[in-house]
Amino acid sequence: MTGLTETLAHFIHEKRLRDLPEGAAEKAKKVIADTFGVILAGAGSELAPPLLRYAAIAGEPGNSPILGTSQPCAPEIAALVNGTFGHALDFDDVLSMMPAHPSAVILAALCADLESEPIPGERVIEAYALGIEAGGKVGLGITVGHYHRGFHGTGTLGIFSALAALAKLRRLNIATTRIAFGIASSMASGLQRNFGTMTKPLHTGCAARSALAAVRLASCGFTAALDALEAKAGFFAAYGVDESDPAAAAAGLGNPWVLVDPGIALKKFPCCYSSHRAMDGVLEMKRRHAFGADDVEKLTCLMPPGGMRALIYPRPATGLEGKFSVQYALAAGILDGKYSLWTFTDEAVRRPAIASLLERVVAREDPRCAEGDPLIETRSPGSRGFVEVEVVLRNGVHDAVRVDKPRGHPSRELSWDDIHAKFMDCAAHASLPTDHARHAFDLISTLDKVNNVANMLKLLR
Image (cartoon, rainbow, N blue to C red; front, side):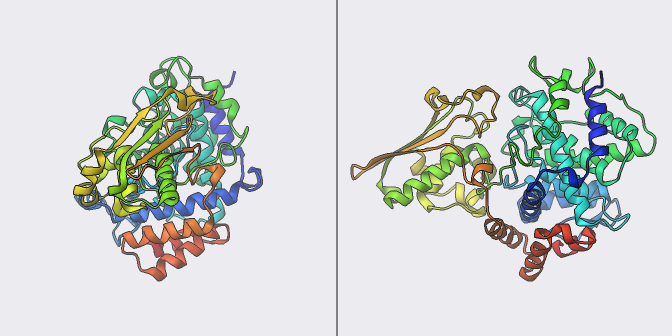
């Protein structure tokens, strides 16, 4: 019986862009555009200075670009930095079946390895689609139980997405791809305890760097177990749970394709996805009743069991902690009536008005929010059940709203106009010239027509 590692290698080797279902390539372009934007935004984040100091200390020369900067470096360092930038603001995509944020891992790895020959945009779309499919189906097989053990799938599973994309881009043969998976299985890492710190986005960069290293080592003749994913002492056995099943991952490849089902969510807000439905709810309440902070007597948010797993900072002290605080997100929505990159800065989190509002904001899990979801135990925290936001105003108004899916969910897909606005905001955060950002976005949105992606990336530096 063919194992998962070999099945993945064959699938990556054999499938082409033409094998994608109708509409999948367009969806891929949207996610790619969104991801380039959030990588740029990361270049303007608080983690950029220490990370770039690290890159300088590493002292590895090269021509691979660090997006949002004029600094080139060696490919593996570029993959590390760009990947970390991509998740720095927690503004990147969500694939709930992993659950993880795989696109920044994939694109950071691909962008670090484009200099050896001209690579047309079609091949990047193809590689991206294979990467999303491979990592997504590994996530499907290992189940959400992997996440519940405390692993951060962006690091532990995203590495396989990036590896698959690189294997496709570089047209690796099946044998070399199997070895690369074996090497990568010993590099997978990432723990949820580091949520709310700079190390969470570092998981993304490490996964991109390790995927590139695994492919290069395998191509140089390094050896590894050919059944590292499914073997008795392999990845699924060590990182999985009783329900984990490598055969389910293999059977799911292309059946259906991840890009169309379940699809990829793009974030409307730069914070943990588990808060997004609550944030939509408070904005809807503001729209209905036009209240201010002083008008609120109490705001209650009910979430499904397990929905607050990653929301570990009820009283955040920093912007990074604020990204993992549904209480803060609700308070900021009440106070500002909108969310921006500034919302999740130290300055915004530490406002006295926020401290006052937090005394009137309650968030808790409620079993009732699981009703009607037969798959509650298999879904990620931000996708299970529904969220309810209830407000009581001092003038006697008492209203509630239920939110099943946040904006940006595949069922409420962002438009190209939405993505363009987000991209330009992210580019401005990195101080990229506006004309460069506009030209780059135009090229990314027509990526299948671009002859050499490396030339396009010059606009993003």
